Image (cartoon, rainbow, N blue to C red; front, side, top):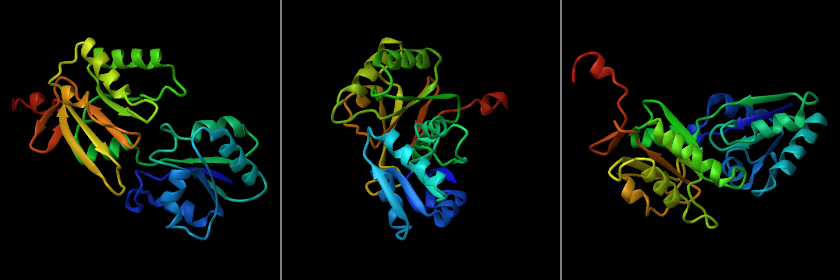
Amino acid sequence: MLTIVGIGPGKAEGMTMEAYECLSRCECIVGYTVYVDLVRQLFPDKVYYSTPMTQEVERCQWAIEQAASGREVAMVCSGDSGVYGMAGLVCELAGEETGVEVLPGVTAACSGAALLGAPLAHDFAVISLSDRLTPWDKIEKRLQAAAAGDFVICLYNPASKGRPDYLRKACDILCETGVEEERICGVVQNIGREGESSRIMTLATLRDYAADMFTTVYIGNRMTKQLGERMITPRGYRQVNGEV
């Protein structure tokens, strides 16, 4: 049996009970090196197999082969196993030959939003700025469409050593689409891990923010506001009830 497990943002407390029970009973744990290291201390007696970034297919094939041989295997993914995770690739490669189960987890969009307050209380779009698998021109169109629809936008993979200016490019695209520089935004780094931090700022400030691959970015819609240390996107309940 092969189970693709979303382990949440990183700390054990952010993992679902279902995910914890699966990792407790499985024989092998496989995943991206960084994510395997997050669970190794919790389950030190397992057989581990990890590969670095860009070796996703090899990692998935190993897991499928081990499961086919009769082992109970868990592939771990940070956050949710189906949101920028390995669930899709495993299901494609396994076809109908190997039993595959997908367990959900708390994705970064949700866990980071909780640290900021309630920025995702209304419709929102999640977009990755990594162009390793998606051409930049398509990412640009998605940013433009989300801005035109006045969605709150959550950005994954906003920058890396090879893409240090991608967050700035995204902010420029949003401004060109009509998003004002004063738009309320938020960033969260190292969600559920050592060095966790959050900050609220304007789009103008976000443009020059030093983000990395462990940063999740939130760009509010026209109604998003800052209340004290919280980033809030009203859904409209108070208007409907005639309070404002």
